[in-house]
Amino acid sequence: MQVLWTDRNDKLPWEENFEEEFLFKQPLLDRNADFKFNEPKNLAIFTTRQWLDEKKPILSIVHDIDGDWQFLTGDQFPEDIKIVALEELIKRDNTLNEVFDLEYGEEAERDFIGGQWTRNKVETDDEE
Image (spheres, rainbow, N blue to C red):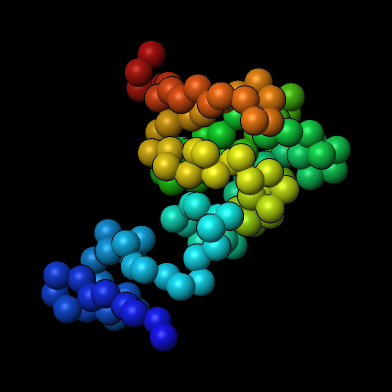
């Protein structure tokens, strides 16, 4: 049996005007402990050809101010960018779960798989 919580206005997640902040607070029975992100498993993520084809490690993750995610190898060029489902990244390297809580406008970097993540605020053109 699945339990669903309503928002403050007694709206269910599929009803119009449901308060989105309650979406990720839902107790989901299908949550896989190996997938910690609040986003859907099939969310489109920017990554690199190097990760996809050459199996290079993800060393940098950016959670853009607009909500997009970039999982980067560090040696990419704009023409190397590919799109994959978030779940595919986590299946290959579950240490990426360590940064599931990056806020909008934050980035994390490491030197190798299993290395310590260093988190920073993303610098924007407005801050220069």
